[in-house]
Length: 418
Image (cartoon, rainbow, N blue to C red; front, side, top):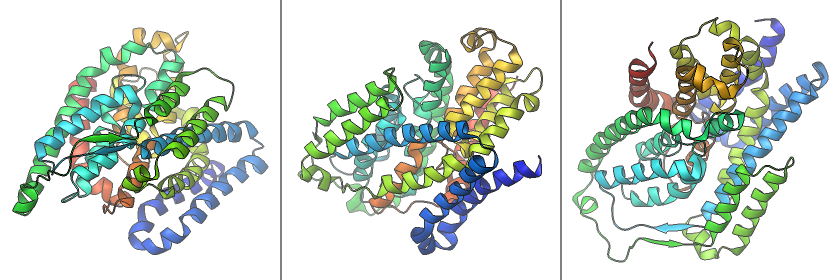
């Protein structure tokens, strides 16, 4: 790596390091100054591209990707905040498993972002008398990431692959064994953890069943706005028209939703504001990291890369660079090393490699808060509802390494080792 490349990568490393340590070491300072840190480091990288490299194309592409990202996440946040799902009684470990399984299946129809933002509030209310970090982290694992690997609608990397020419039903046909193993093992781990937590709870909590609480849904007209947003994702359109439709749906939802529904959801704009600021810095500072990966991936992979290389390579970088652009970078590298005429032919000529890229991007997206778009949003909503969430490093040490990594290692051994 040259000195120039290192200099451009430094703001990204500083931002990730600060996000990982500052909330633990200096939480009050971080709360006051996170916007200055994220936007300041992003401005340094953007300035280097503008004044030093004169690369307006990369800056424009990153800006468009950021606008698309924040329009989708922001509009889903507003619309989901207008739907209140009433829940009944205290959730048992088995009821929680059923809820998470239903969320993992629904993610393939509504997308991980839409499903996660729709269900996170009722999930917290179901467990309100004993909700802890493990409830939200496993929700991130299953509903916001792993569950959505059966269709291109499910997770952003797979949708990008579909746009590149990967057949729509190829994903479901090839990914279901990994989905079954991943979801099944994570649900089993969650059940063991949640049962121990449930048995430690006071008996009034375990026996709680309030007759006044019933399963009900308020704000059903927002399902129309949700359909508009999901339709806009697939609609071919001129630049920014798609994002305009999403924002229009968000505006329609916000101004037509009764205030009582927003109050029941404790809805305000702070979570999306925090996500918008931090990801503005991330999208800007990760530009040189993605450029380096795009230029060097083929050399790193070699002439005949195995599925394992793609699984771990895509996975590890997805957890820190966001899984959607990482997926595209490795798919492009495979296209180059395979000498294929079109990306659409790769599922035929190199099915295991494409499968490894797909599973690596989707599953490893759950490994950190920034691995996939909805992760940080869920953290912000949980914090808004007074759930103490782990810091960036605590998330990795307490949950990713002991719970998610063994599942990933087993998937490698069973499906991608050779």
